[in-house]
Amino acid sequence: MTTSQIIEAVGYLGSTLVLVSFLMASVVKLRIVNSVGSAIFAVYALIIRSYPTAIMNICLLLINIYYLWKLRKTAPEYRMVTLSPGEGYVRFFLDSHREDIAACFPGRSWDSPTLDRAWLVCHGEEPAGLLLGEEKDGVLDVALDYSTPAYRDCSVGSFLLEHLPKEELRALRYAGAEEGHLAYLKKMGYREEDGAYVREL
Image (cartoon, rainbow, N blue to C red):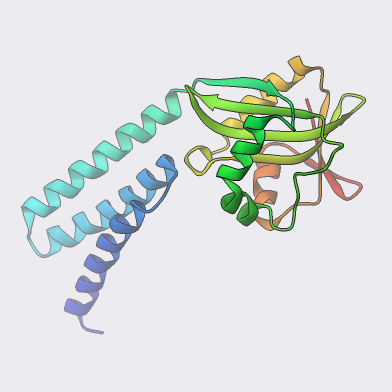
């Protein structure tokens, strides 16, 4: 591979990452991937001495860094709404996000008649997450702990962990763990216990 081909490949990589970032629903992931793409493309532009392109991408990088810093410093203002699992809005939320929920939690069902607790987390007026489960002596057997793609940065989970003790719960229990959900459980402080994952509140 010649030097010119390597330089060209760097340019393609940077532009591809910038384009791919706009396909991401999560604002945080979008800005991170866009930052990496902009940085790579800025290096490419400097190498080929396309200074206007380099300046534009450096500015994009700085803008992304600023907003990532702002997102990190400013906690989202969530509200928690207590609902019934069989309530109409819960069914509407599940239907609206059915494909994404099925992709995140393959093979699971939310139609069990034993489910008796439900909480909807909203950011402003926008639904951001839903927690469904069955309570037994202050322990919630979690059937679903789902965040919409735009809020899938663990902030909804952290908010729930902070506020669920006010709902007279002392622990969460999640039986089994999908591969994609396991990292979230560990990040939220769940520990493995008797084939399930438990988080004390």
